[in-house]
Image (tube, rainbow over all chains, first blue to last red; front, side, top):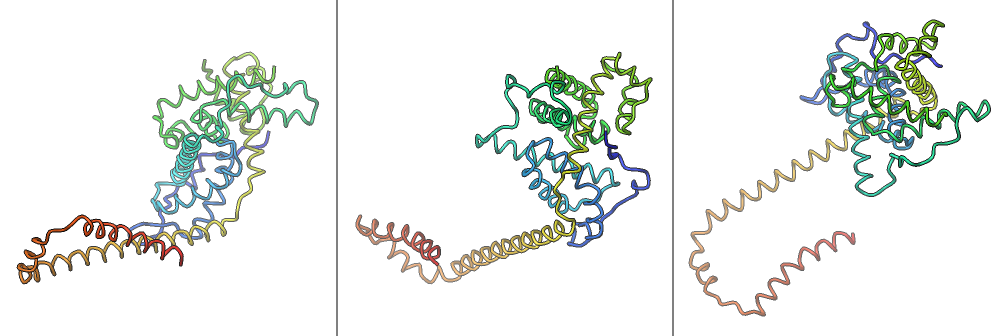
Length: 197
Length: 142
């Protein structure tokens, strides 16, 4: 397992990151500040978007849109963690909007039917294809979850976000996150076990 | 189903090394087994996603953002200008009406007394409807 990137930032990064005023009353980020922020957040954000949408192309588009909206909002943030959470929140809302529009226009939905068969059990596939099979299992399993469950599980376990941060990003009360997260975890575990058995 | 060692296990999974004692615990504890299965799979998936992310450079994204921001700012300014012009014209028309209307009271009374026949009304209505459509077609063809 590859070492994961810590989501909550270290104390040295928790300093105030107020942006300089560029455009009248709205305080926008400067270029150097943006570049540094982008380098720190783009990969985790793309990973998040590609896995919650299940579409790499869409993740590319959403990533750029999210950064633009974040930039345009021009908010000042208390610290780096708050700033990062705001970006993820914008990205989440954009992904939800796209999913809603696709659903309205009758395009292919991400959520599979519950009775669709999972791929061949991972244990039955010889190495090195097994790793790919496990990933396929996870990708398929994720599509069986509710969007908010996918988002929550990814933030909690892949990103290492705290319950408070998840609540802020997803617009859920922090106190509810624990219960919802356990439910989502149970569901994913059941699906994964079903696929690997 | 919650175990007090879940945070410890999650940290170990994040570091990429689960000690033998914790490993054994994860095999006998339902909550930790479930956590290991889910978090382990998601962490692996994240590692793959992080490595395969096809990201544009920060400079490219910044440049696109600036272009778009400039365009939106110009559009907003243009809209404000149009609204300002419309308000100015409306005020000018009201003022003109207020100043000149009393001088044309007799003419307006005469105009109101004209009895319009159906062909004239139809002609006027058709002209009023066709004029903007014609204008739109002319602009579009350019």
